[in-house]
Image 1 (cartoon, chains in turn blue, orange):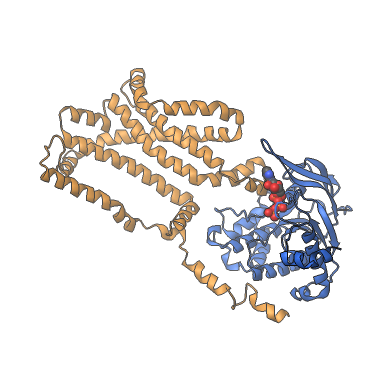
Image 2 (cartoon, rainbow over the protein chains, first blue to last red):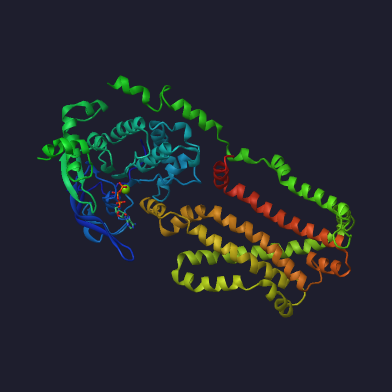
Length: 284
Length: 290
Ligand SMILES: Nc1ncnc2c1ncn2[C@@H]1O[C@H](COP(=O)(O)OP(=O)(O)OP(=O)(O)O)[C@@H](O)[C@H]1O
Ligand SMILES: [Mg+2]
């Protein structure tokens, strides 16, 4: 709780916090060019929780890499806090698609690594790290090594690492991908708790429509590759949201819209729906 | 609603969590894996079997002693000549160790250079490969002619044969880091230097040690080759002299001591690895179902 924030963007509230313009990325191999992301533009306000849903291979991870400056765009720009991103940003917490834990550190030390290069002492992060580990049910695994954890545990540890230094910007790439359905629900609630009352800006990538609606202020729907935005919806369900929100008609309306959008793009194919014509009815 | 969801919380006592905890407790800590006494018996089993078959064969087929001495005779020679064997092995050991340490000292910076500079990689690699494919046995007489009968050419030969596996493995180890790990390091604010020290170096250690193990056994062979070609001391020299007088018992005795030196150095590296890279070994045992 007492750990220092390293917010270099905090002083000036730039509007919008993140500005993405005409962003595209192609990967050039010897004979082929893969268009991963195609001319994408969107804004992200400070403190906003934005989800990106879309089919596999549509450039979601690529988008995250571009926003964090870890790869450079083929065309277009990313601005964070009014400054154009040209090199990897470090005032950020990233939960990558893979857990990327270091095998030679204990779970706790893996999380404390986050402070190692920021001049934040281990001691000042320890309380917060322990608190986070406790929250995700890993308290007694703090001194275990990654090879002693299950896939889901590893992923939870990696989420703790992304959050421990209270970054102003949180980037998450399918962070619950390796979790079982129950822990996934728990993590969604925990993430919401962890972020409540903070002004953390979040870019959250997921395959799960329900998760996107549950957590987000706004959802971007990406079409099949090369990805770009095919739909955008503002989720104005009241917060805090409980799991029961998923059974409400409002929630169903949001997730129904995303699903039908993805169906219309041919991303989800429902043969019975095609046969009975309900899918086409829904598209109109 | 929340009442129904409660039991699935990770902290609660019901649900799948207790089962998970139980499983974790069965995993051995790296310290428990020091099972040397028990393992040693297994290691020695084939050696003892070989000796027995050997002894039996010399009796059954009536093989002449100067062609194939009996293990019993070899063992007694080993005891009778223990002083000279010890003296000569001390020389061989020193040559191997110096050559090996020299190889490590040169190979590590070269490997770092190979990983950091593409130009260096392009220019150094061909030289490395060529130096490796040149048979050292053919070079050994030349070195003796150039450098004399002292320890210098032996150390150089030990260095030459140990160098290649160490440099290749170290370079491979240093390239072992996933690109995604570099992304993580960057997002944590690590500089190139910090990424090297805190990410690349530790992740290279398992493969680095694999290289050391090959290198250290090679170093012994390199030193012995030097001694065979021309020397005034060392186990290789002793073997040549024993062979000249058809003292096959002594030849076999010194071969056994040569092997023992190699094994001892290998084991030393293995112990060092267990101390410095515990995560590598425990993971390996897990994969083998240990
Ligand atoms: N470094 C790379 N080199 C070459 N091609 C790449 C690279 N990274 C991604 N791609 C290609 O870009 C496309 C988009 O990849 P990306 O990883 O962004 O997809 P994604 O939406 O995250 O998919 P998933 O949901 O399966 O993780 C894919 O066709 C992929 O093959
Ligand atoms: Mg991805």
